Amino acid sequence: MIYDIAIIGGGPAGYTAAELAGKSGLKTVLFEKNALGGVCLNEGCIPTKTLLYSAKVFNTAKDSAKYGISCENINYDLSKIIARKNKVVRKLVAGIRAKMTEAGVEVVTGEAIIKETTVICNGQTYEAKKLILCAGSETVIPPIPGLKETGFWTSREALDNKEVPESLLIIGGGVIGIEFASFFNTLGAKVVVVEMLDEILGGMDKELSGLLRQELTKKGIEFHLTTKVISVNNNQVEIEKDGEKQLIHTSQILLSAGRKPVLKGITVNEYMQTSNPNIYACGDITGFSLLAHTAVREAEVAVEHILRNFSPSCGGGRGEAMSYKAIPGVVYTNPEIAGVGQTEEALQTEGIPYTVKRLPMAYSGRFVAENEQGNGVCKIIEGEDGSILGVHILGNPASEIIVIAGIAIEKGMKAEALKAMVFPHPTVGEIIKETL
Image 1 (cartoon, rainbow, N blue to C red):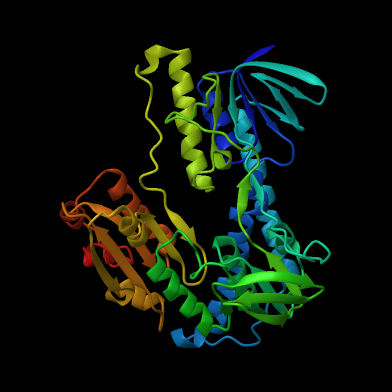
Image 2: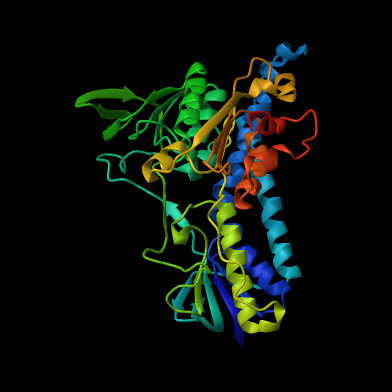
């Protein structure tokens, strides 16, 4: 049998591409060597957010007196938190499998070997007219002396651990590291974060990242910036900053030094095509942002381009090109931080003039009502012509209201046009209108 499309990898890019292709009438086969949903659903986005929500509920219960509510004997059961996380993952994986069935997609479990557009899996050969590579990414393991000899965690082990360590040293202050720092700190662990850069969350707005770090420091998390891990000896971690070395004892080490594409050297055009016009690549292996929502859009662009190849009458042209103009970044700590578009640091590097408008989140009545003694900032960066270049928000629920800014940036809206829109009142999202 010859398939119209063969897709390698069942993560957000893969299952999105498969569903769209299948529903569009293309004979589609999807290969996944582990579990549908990929890293995002099984070891990343969904399980971490499930844990973080449990931590947020626990923290809200502890602070309930601020809202006139009395709670006694507040505690948590980590084994039940993990069990709920597993239940959520199973439900969503089953949902993806149901979508594949509904779309008529053949799902093959096993490791795929690729030769041009031919795929070999479990001893069987599959021929396809088009191939989409969605192989994802893997954890970076830096060559730190002594690390491999310890029982260090990656995000996979941290997600399934059923006991809170007395102390936790996290190597890496990126998104994954900071989210786990927030989770384990809320549950009572002594958390230390070691980061080589001069601020956490590299790539996000530096001012707001610093403000988040200050909030997390108040909660007891210890940060060592511009600091390198030199070696690990059992539970003794040697760090170095400005030539000075220090030993830190910890019960557990969590490695969070980033992720890297499984396949290297893949370049694509604006329609996600590789140098072979019959082979496309989407998701983390393109190496652009390693975010699930980026992967989903890349998959949509690729399949839409393929559909026009199969059936030019479905709209003509080459389809919409992939746009990276407004890719939101979110860190689901408590408080949340989110950003979309350009940062000040990026604009300064490119020599692009801009102005900044900022307001405390307390200018939103809804924020004050729901975040007793909470702090936060809404920061909007405008170009000389009044266009919105970037929006960065610290404060709950930044992950939800950043969508407004992303749409405005992608559509090239001027600040005055967005300010003229009617925002429902009272909402935290009004802070964007207030800041403009």
